[in-house]
Image 1 (cartoon, rainbow, N blue to C red):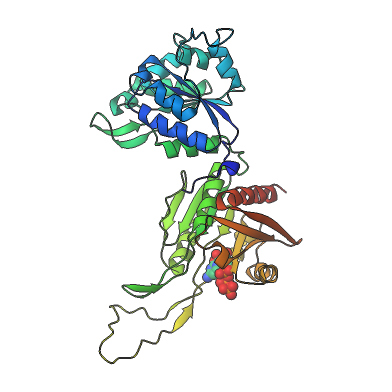
Image 2: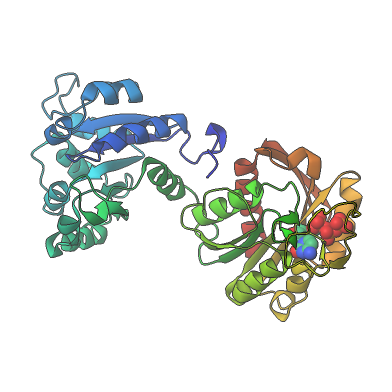
Length: 411
Ligand code: CTP
């Protein structure tokens, strides 16, 4: 997914204690530390002795820009109480990797090293503890570990999931620590206000591809970035998200269910198959208005002396207008948001399009100024009037738009 610029990252300005317990996955903690700093967080690394067997404090100091703590008797602290001082300064303690042994210790309130001591000493109601487990698949599946994870959750810790796949030991299964980018996304979501909790957001994104023959087709320059950023922002805001994507090469945002389609007709079918569960529909896709009438079964050959083929077109279904006219939308159980890609007279076109499509909110943008770019400027049009969202990254705009939609759902 797109990198979140510092200003719009929910991690900007946060102070995190990054704890490392022993495990091969310590190498991923280095990358995580770097990503957190890049997102605008300050990071204080605390390592157990076992973690220092896998990665050096030198690396973690260089990446965090702060000396690493590992000893509960560290004389650098004036009061010699590193566990108190470090935990009081933190917005959260993130233990990545959290080994099986470290989690077993935590459930008993074990405090024989600085990291355990600090987790126990943290003010429970103010400093969340987030754990990223990492271990061999048998260790992870063991009833003792599963019992410990359940107990940690019951005690108020936030235990993240694990990845599946090939492990350092050569075995294959569940237990890998999540990748640094996945952890970054989990932490970004953790710090995002849950303004869409309980909502199911359905989003269309990207272009559609209308075939001419088996090797050629007609499409447009939409990159899908805005729709994917909206999916990411909606998931971070606590919604269940389904993303119907035209042909784009963007990675699926974390937590989002993605349905890939090619043509406008396929997009409509995919939307129809999930719209009954949705409470918000955001149509950000640049759907082709027409498709080729009578797609050729075989590649159309140039041949010698033949004329260029004459193509005729039929109009595609208007997906948004169809959804907006449904019983579900008209009865207020589904809130619809349309987009308008225009080349000029944005306000007038957006207002007219909002009425034509029958949606409460329409988001206008200038097509040539947005297609393929990471930033955009938006003009929101509703019954009352219009509101500009100044040029910013699409990730930032998506966060703002999600907050606006959430506000409208509430009122
Ligand atoms: N839309 C849709 N199905 C279509 C065409 C458009 O769902 N067949 C949706 C888009 O996803 C967007 C809105 O309708 O939310 C407006 O799309 P746009 O391409 O700007 O407008 P059109 O309806 O195609 O009108 P025009 O091309 O004349 O501007």
